[in-house]
Image (cartoon, rainbow, N blue to C red; front, side):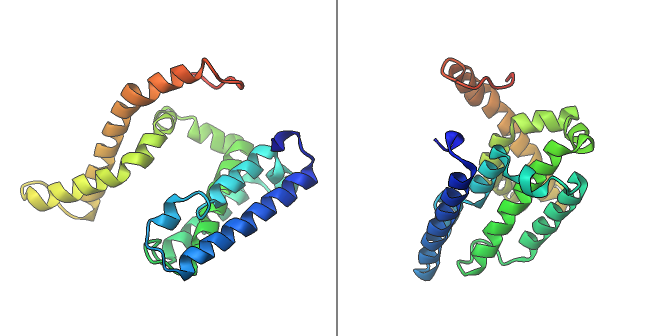
Length: 205
């Protein structure tokens, strides 16, 4: 619906959505609603979605067209660093507003800088990144399972290497493996089914 509306209508609509959703999140925080409610609900964890819409509508082109993409990429890394030093999202407090805003800015600036930079496009066009990118939904869905699996085997099997690096490597390998299986068994059939109904033709699976 927003696609056919004027720029002013889009801006006002997005601002109203942000204000309403921020208010809802503040109510959750005030009521001390436990994690992961705020994290998983789109009305309380919305910044990445909203800013992704702005990128899609070309809003970043208007405001950031004179800023070099590599500078934007550096700024996005700074916001990622800010997210890392802020309190964990499991702790429900007012800091969540800053954390979620920072995540939204980090992800949207990273996306925009890659779209506008030939250097970054070339880097992320490397086969391993393309391979993982196609399976990124599975990496997201199964990473907690991978962490749990890695922690379990490190604690239970004393003959294998341990330590935080080992846990990370085991979790990464497990998550990638499960994601590949999930992509071929679950996602691909649905993506092929989607092609029967799509309006905008997507890239090859």
